[in-house]
Length: 301
View 1 (cartoon, rainbow, N blue to C red):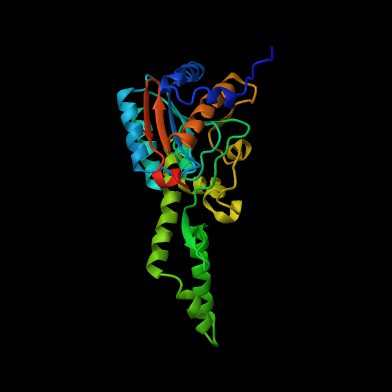
View 2: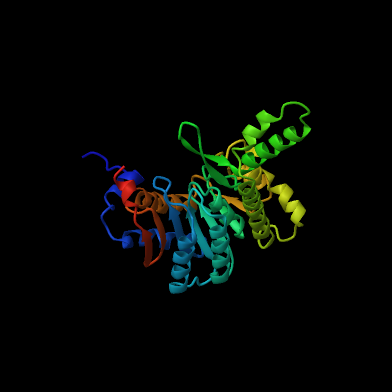
């Protein structure tokens, strides 16, 4: 008889049409290993599903219905979203935690999800877990109609550079004026505010938790790699455990052979399957599941 496959993906395929209680064992395992009440917040990387206020509301409802007994451990997987939603999630987790508030990153917690990590007391990462820059992005439509994300900081810098060159120009200023006409000065000011907001949320989150003994200026300097485009070159560039540790973040590494990492990955594989095939977002804990359907237009593409 052929040996049965132990692949997590194969196991998940047999669970696809089962109820959420098929994942109960994995929550119990994590709660025992981490000595904490475990909650999961997943938003899809496949479908258009970013962190927003609805996620904060779902999480608060879950925490109200199953208050953490002591430490709160949030298993977080998300490409990011609204900075203000991240700030709310941090506040909610701290308010409802019976003790410490910690985050586990099983795979990727990027952008605003990284902000949530910064507001915790400790971030558990595995050898392949990724955080990412928190500088805000803006949708940019090129001349060919193609939409892409551009760092807000890059838009601001290009506008300011053109303004500076135009002021310094002693000859034909027309080329500069034509380029500046593509910008809305009021919008640039709003982008500056958004950029400063992200930094402000990050600094305040860190100073209320894992960097509470440092000055605001010191924290700003420590996390430049998270807040400045010039440091990472790309918003999507991953920041792994060692780099996060070098910045002074309160991170702990789970060995790839450890029981904790194995248990985290078991739950991650199942929830990732759910937010790829059955839902756009999920908040879940032992005995409670909240989900947001995949948008119909995403299903038909």
